[in-house]
Image: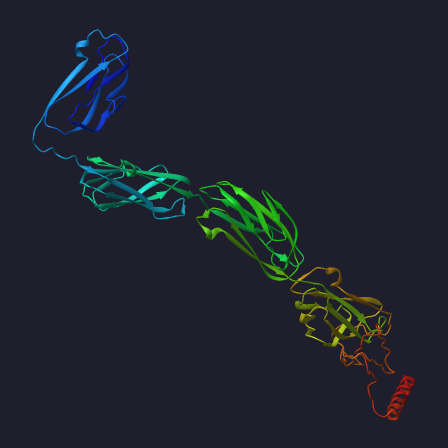
Length: 544
């Protein structure tokens, strides 16, 4: 049925009545406007503009023989100035020929996805299955699956027909009763959030159940992040007891915002927490957790932890970062920095002399005592004792290590915490009328935190001696009263009656123990020899 308004005005409340006559059975209808009630036979068009044309197609089956007249009538609210064209009749003669059956199908479509937990950037497969429940073969079967925003097409495989990713149409063709076909579409997710993928199936035949011709599947695409962490320390040379700053810098490379970001930096043994400063969030020194919270794409924040070193050696400080979302690259989620904390020592010493007022030609003993106040062992310990001009080296003995008189270096080596060592140096006084200062310098491999006690010294004052030979030079004399160094661990000192060497420290051992006059033989013979010499000299002078 075709209805047209020839005007000149618009028509309203337009109705077409087409009550199907006996012999016709209603099947279905399609129309371009309004609605048709097959029970009353009324097609409600409504408004029909001047020049507008609308159509109604009613599909029926013939159920009787003979002539069948179908009458249709049209009315409107306005006055119709030509009523001759408001009715139409159509006559169909029923014959005894077989009526061709109307083919029907029941197509169903189903859609699944191959992953239950999907993150942004994942490659996923959509499986679309189409089935014909019959009873007839479906022709010109098409499935429409146009990928929504957030999905990028990669590839597809169809068990029958072909899929065009541009328009999203899978052309299947014929699908026999009880036949099933499938299409797999491989996509990549590029957006996070909820994504709904719709699919619809159609055919030329009447589908007796259109409720199963659509399948909609919604997935949740979780966001992804790339958190990075870096750690630095503000000093390249660190000694025990130093205060140092650890700077931890974190960033989010995206592509999404990171939530519930946490950084764990539990200080290792050897470090004592002092203070911390954060750009964002809070740091708990007890559990070592820095709670950052959200970190936007491209955002960078830092934490500075101030610590004190309390142990020497290698100390490794580890840091780790996590977020709520999937991290695309976990290789940059940790940062480990190892520092070398150098030990510290406090070498100290004392220097004494057993005679602070010796005379020219006297043999005296210098006693150098070295110990390590720590807190760490000292290594490569050396003591420099360059004898001043006016002293002639005779001998020495060390409780540890060795003394080289040519270089004036006492090489001790290792010196443990609290360990004490001594060096005794025997010298001869070769000057007079002066004061000599004998100083030493103590060094070790480690940092010495108190250098004020590394330079002990001792002084001697030599009185005037008129018998000092004019040609006496240091280093060219042989002592008339040599001293044999004693064991520096032996503190029981005794002196002989011919040399008055006193010990300036009552608790230090003197190397000048057991000093005696050199034996010259029979004293009577010596006295006679002297008289003979004198007797020869006196007459000679008188003759002159």
